[in-house]
Length: 386
Image (cartoon, rainbow, N blue to C red):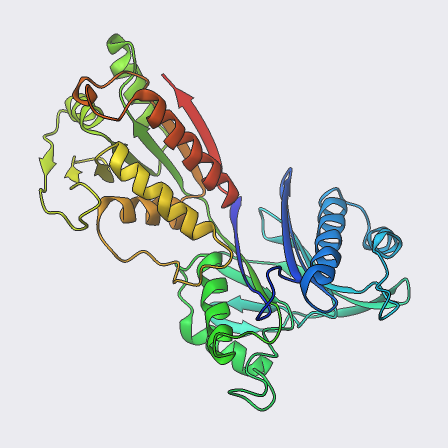
C-alpha cells in the first residue's frame, strides 16, 4: 500500500543570534523522500554556513542514491575549516524513506532519533559504522500507518540547563512528553512545534543553543478536490463538475456561483448558515454530498494567511485547527488531512464582483500562492483551469 510521507520542522535561534546554526533540507525523488537535519559547530553565521552546506550536500547526494561513504567523503572535503577551532564540524541526521515506509536513518553526533509507534516512544535498532574516521549510526526503517520519526539537534537535550533544569532535558523525559501529547491525527509539523515550544519554555524564552525539531509521519493518502469558480464556457458546467467529483476522497466548493452550479448538478438544495464564526471570514453553506462549502476570495485570502503561519519555522503556535469558520476548516482539511490536492479553477468573471476590488487575476494569484504553499508542505498538488 502506498502511504503519504508528511514532514515538518521548527527552529529556535540561540538567544541574541539572527541566524540559526541548524538547517533542515527536504527532497522528493521518485518514490523516496529525504530529510536532513544538520547542526553546525557553535552558533551564528559560521554555524549557519556549516549546517547549510552539510544539509544541502547530504540531501542532494542521498536523494540521488549516493552511498553514505561517498556522501561523508564529499562533505569532509567541502566544508570550510574554522580558523579558531581548526575543524570543520557539523552533526547530522538523515532520513531516507519510501512510500511503503521502508528506508534508513543515519545519525552522526545528533541526539538519537525517537520512533513513535501506536503512541509509544521507542528506540530504533542502531548499527555503528565507521566512515572517514567518523562513527555513524545506521537504522533500518519499516514504518507503519501513523508512525512518526522525531529528530532533533542537541539544543533539545540542553534545554533548561542552568535555568529550569540542572542537567537539561533528558531523553527519557522527552519521550514521556511526546507520549503525553501524542494524537494519531497530529501532523508532523504539530509534533515538531509542540516539542520545540516546550524546549523554548524550559529555556525561559532565551534559548542557550540553536534548537531544531524535525519530524516525519507516514500515513494513508487522502485526495481532496477543491473547486474555485465556474468555467468560462457555461455549456461545460456538467463536464467540469463531473471531473471535480470523480475519484475524490473529500470535496470542497469555494464561492457562491460554484456552489449554485454544484447544487444544481447534484439536484440538492444549498443551506446557508449566516452565523459569523469569525468576523474576518464569511459564513459557510452546506450541500449534501459535498464535504465543505465556503465563500470564495475572502475565505481563500484568510486561508493563505493561515498557510504562511503554518509554514513558518519560527512560529510555535499549535498546528491544530479547532475553530469552525470556513478558512480554519479549509486549513484543517488541506494542511492536516490531505496528501493530494487537486484544484479545479474556473476562470469565469463573476458579475457580483463588478465595482469591487476583486477580479479574476486576484483569484488566480490566490490559488497559485496557496498551491505553492501546499507544495512546500509536501502535498502533491495539481492545478486544472477551465
